[in-house]
Amino acid sequence: MLRWALGFFIVAIIAAIFGFGGIAAGAASIAKVLFFIFIVLFLLTLIFGARVFK
Image 1 (cartoon, helix red, strand yellow):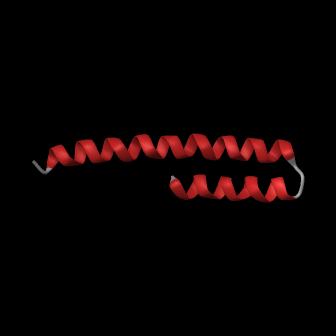
Image 2 (cartoon, one colour; image 1 turned 60 degrees about the vertical axis):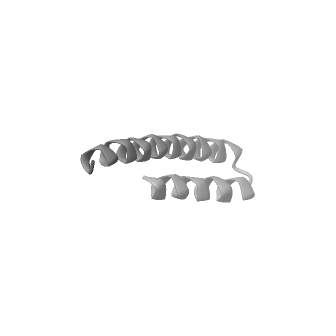
């Protein structure tokens, strides 16, 4: 999922360089949402993974 977020971030940067503001904003917002989903899933994995090994 982090790879998808990074991909959308790169698309947003390239679109911003070429002047496509709407596409850049859309790709940046998708990247932001995917990044936060990744963070939540990562933290849940750390919490529940630690409980399994105790």
